[in-house]
Amino acid sequence: MSGDLKQRLARLAAAVAERRDQAAFAELFDYFAPRLNAYLQRLGMQASQAEEMTQEVMIVLWHKAGLFDPAKSSLATWLFRVARNRRIDALRRDRSGLLDPDDPALQPSQPEAADDIMAAEERDERVREAMLDLPEEQAMLVRQAFFLGRSHSQIAEDTGLPLGTVKSRIRLAFSRLRRSLESGDGDITLH
Image (cartoon, rainbow, N blue to C red; front, side, top):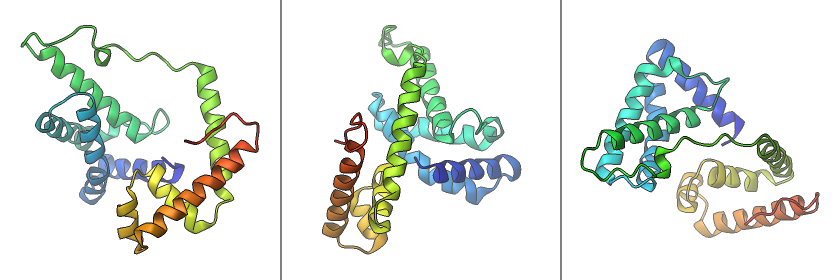
C-alpha cells in the first residue's frame, strides 16, 4: 500500500472520528469491506459468517474511529487486527466443541524480528526507487495492480485501455523492475 493511500485512508478515518462523515465512511467501507471479507474467508469462515463479521468490523470503525492512531499502525493493519480478534472471540464463544486450542489463529502473533523489519524497509525503499524509473503509464498500472490489489480487467475498465495493453505494460514494468532491482546488490528478486 503506497504512502499516499495510507495517508488518504487515515484522513478519511479522522473525518469519521471527528465529524461522523458518512461520505468518508462509505469510501472506507467500499475499500475495506471486500478485503476484510476475503481475509476472513481465507481464515476459514463461511461466506455468510465472514460477511457478518465484516459488518461488525466496519461498525467498530464507525463508532471507534477515534481510537485509531496513524502513528502506531496503518488503518489497514488496525482493521485487520480488529477482524482477527473478532474472529478469535467468536471461535472462543463457539460451544460446539469444534474449537481447536492449537489453531494458529488463536495464538498470539510473534513480534517481527528487528532485522526482518529493517530488511523489509530497505527492500521497500529499493522498490520505491525503482518505481521512479518506470514510465508513468507503467508505474500507474503497477500501483493499481500490486498496491491497490486491482485485477487487470478492473484496471482496463477504469483506464479504458484494452486488457492486452494493461497486461503487456505491467509485464514490461515488472521486467524493468526486476532488472533494476537485480542490478543492485542482488538480494531482491521479483516473482
